[in-house]
Amino acid sequence: MSLIVQKYGGTSVASLDHIRRVAMGIVNTKRKGNKVAVVVSAMSGETDRLLNMASQVMVSPPGREQDALVATGEQSCAALMAITLESLGHRSKSYLGLQLPLITDEVHTKARIVDLQTEILHDAINEGVIPVIAGFQGVSNNGNITTLGRGGSDTTAVALAASLKADCCEIYTDVDGVYTADPNICPKARHLKKISYQEMLELAGLGTKVLHARSVELAQKYQVPLVVKSSFGGERQTWIVNEEEVMENSVIKGVTLERNVSKISLIRVPDRPGIAYKILSPLAETSINVDMIIQNASIDGFADFTFTIPTTDLEKARVLVNKVAEEVGALEMLADNNIVKVSAVGIGIKTNPGVAARMFKSLSEENINIEMISTSEYRISCVIEEKYGELAVRAVHKAFGLDQTDPKHDGDNQNE
Ligand code: ADP
Ligand code: ASP
Ligand code: MG
Image (cartoon, rainbow, N blue to C red; front, side, top):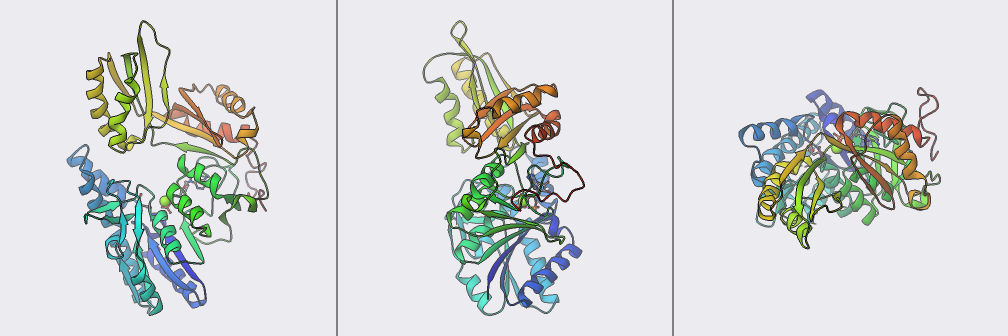
């Protein structure tokens, strides 16, 4: 008898009809002789609706209250799923993060799990009850409700699978697996039957929202067998596996588009030791993640200092950096949220020197200006104007020979 953790994302539970269909699938899994624990996201659009209401009241609401608000989306969905399972004649109970408990740190809106108790779930499962856990949420040691960051229900599912020592964690979503690019942006993207934890982690960290980055990190750490499937049926799926299990190794595994990026520039900052520290340390203290940083060459003792942060932190960052700008005597501060980050990802990058040039060429052929560049062993990222984001993904995807030769071909050609 296997123990399976199944996670259903927002589009899979978008209406009562969807929930009923999902519930029938869960019952089927149980009928086949498996034990099952279920994690749900909020119904599609609900988290955005709640966030939008909060921002109408206040531009940058207190994190504690924002978390208390958005966690209700998963709460109502979990209860509705449990009620639906009961209506189908199966015993079921919903659980909130704080009922398990799933303990996190107190970095509101992007908390990290520090402990997870699953005794009550073990007991429920052994009594034949199907537990339905509200994803995305936890509780801090001070008793405050927290959330794990957008897309965080995947992380709840993998953490539960690790803690329950489940045989497998199944992520059900609106696509039938991981592709070489978002299939909704790049119709010629190829389906991947397998991808390594390492490459998936890079893709997820750079905007491939089919899996939350932290979920991949946990799956690798605890060696949780992780699979992405469509909740609308079909045979195709993608397994996330160890590197040595991926037979095919193309230089570039995928192309990503990160939309949650903004840029802040401080113009004519006096160029003296300690300036970068002064500008960036208030952001670090507030857990705002600074990604790319550029300081141009100093002219007359002044330089421009530019960096990127998540757009979701822009308002907070603007206030903090404005204060520093005055203190250090910068001429002005500029903020720009009309940018995106396009990245090419693959473990072959470190051993293939021509990769960056090929990416820049493909962007130049589309007349797309690159505003910032960063590279690592596994990726090359370019910041460009937002309106060119999707075009850039398709161009880079093509340039690396990732396009399917026939768009109607069913795609599975790598790793088969
Ligand atoms: P859920 O609500 O089920 O958690 P998400 O919206 O978080 O679903 O993730 C699924 C979406 O991820 C897909 O609809 C697709 O547009 C997007 N996506 C982005 N990049 C990829 C990729 N490389 N492969 C598959 N899906 C991708
Ligand atoms: N409902 C949350 C979100 O929309 C968490 C999730 O779906 O995983 O981000
Ligand atoms: Mg998601």
